[in-house]
Image 1: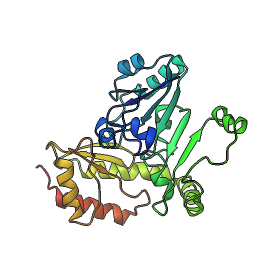
Image 2: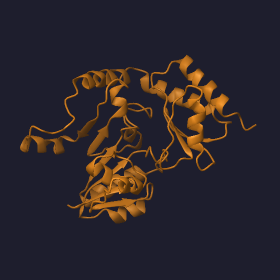
Image 3: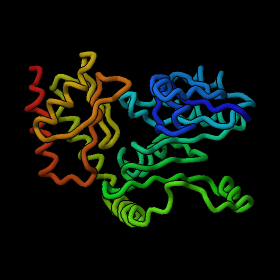
Image 4: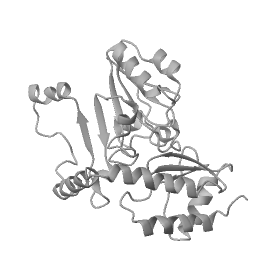
Length: 270
């Protein structure tokens, strides 16, 4: 099989094939236009179904694309992607680098959609902010490949002992009773507190996108919050949007300080 299907506005990294699966603007910067990569609009199931055929090795997408401003998947979209893959015999690869590890109120976002990928990519939050580490998870059936075809050099950057210690602690924390419920409660508190401000909110758990009307509103908002001691990054592929992802272990005092700071930066509309 010779093709990979991904979505427009995706970002999967800046190396090799990950870059080839991403946005056109990013590929052009690094002269990375490889054959065999097909891109379709996110949330357009008809376009994806038309693109996936007997030549397709895999479909890769972020469950909720971060750099595109966290557009939320339409009801049934991810299930439809899974069905299209199954129908063509292709693999489904979900990138949950930003949405995984409890960020959306479940360990993985795909659990909320009742969809299971063949491969799953995790990172960022896996480190607990201590030491960079990422992971690729796969079904037992796919993992048998490594038993049948063992090789010693599986990763240039593998073997991060300190990162593994941090990741183990992160997994323990997100598995604690009440952790997921706390994430959902804090997310609701933030969404409610922001309801009368000069932006709209997209949210799953404590993953929020603040969407402004202005073309570069997310960039302006980033500066306004940075000046007040809060760091949040705009969405590069939709600069109207500010990605807003408070620490999952934020205390009640932290949350109220965040609310006060945001409300100071963006006064109510009424």
